Figure (cartoon, rainbow, N blue to C red):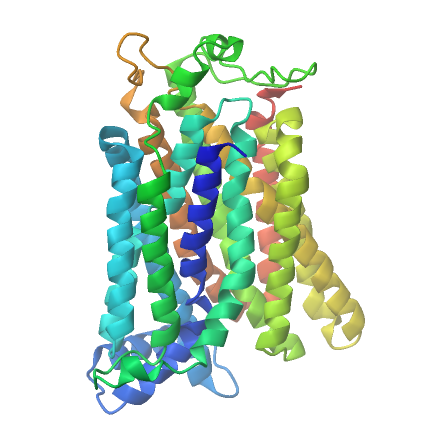
Length: 479
């Protein structure tokens, strides 16, 4: 693994580790704030829970413990707020990195992440905790800038392989981060922190761990990460591959006798059109997929009364299989089959998984073991989807961006403002974050109104339609 790729991967692991630590704590945090602020019916939390309860009551009236459902739904809304903020800020972060450099902008976003963790440590009201989430949502730029950096230092032939490191980091951290967050949530703070008498958040221990990880990541980036904007094409300018990136816009593997070409449209207008198509596809896919992710624990709780450990094992298995697929299969297969075909395979796998999930409730009462088997089969399908689609679409989008460097100045050649890597990839990520913000809300509404079988069946039809829609971009891949 080249130096820059190694630095980016390690920084992503630190960043996503810090990001995933609080994920399993949302319901517990809300319950803690509810106990503290229940005496104030006009408070921010009371009014928020009343709104959530009112909306939920229009769609679903649980037979027991409706407060628990409200807390779970509010936890999902907190995640949607984060994604909505990312939808808003991602294009700006990308554009700033095009202008001022990847490293400089990344370090500025790290300051915001550290501030978010500090607010969490000290947040003793729900309003202050939401402030920490807002600051974090507006500051998180590591993932999209990591994608831009990896695109800077990789050739079109190795782009998908380099970007696979992002997916592998996600899979690893989503496996280990939540369990570690839950473990440290039960650990008290050392006496040195409590002796001062300053009141801290009930989960200050995982919050401090998050803070330490972010500080370490920032120091590591300052020391180890070079500025990469404009460097990749300059390094590759003496290779045959660089000469062929325009105007034929192909991707050639110069290390193999087999040539795999993912044709980039010859004109700026066609590349812009393809980027627009990829953004729509990213939005629609993540809108459906994130809804499935969010409602999966509802399904296991409703049908099988699974506890947190069993749900954690299911989600963790998806992450483990996804990481193994990305490291062992996807990063090697994409150069041979192309990004469009790999994305279509992943979307088709998701459609199959949703078909299996739609059958789970039908068999749950009469054939429980068969129902659980279908659930596990669906989990494998979703793991393949997680390993393939976003990574493939991101790689495909990056191939449409400007690759050239001026031979005299060494600066990037800008063919069109919308094709600058930071801005184009920022808008691409923004579209996906909008899907992540809306998907869980729509999936919950459907789940509680029409039931899980109908919800997953409709999702399967939508995914099959999406798979058919990817034919247009898959045809651009020629082996």
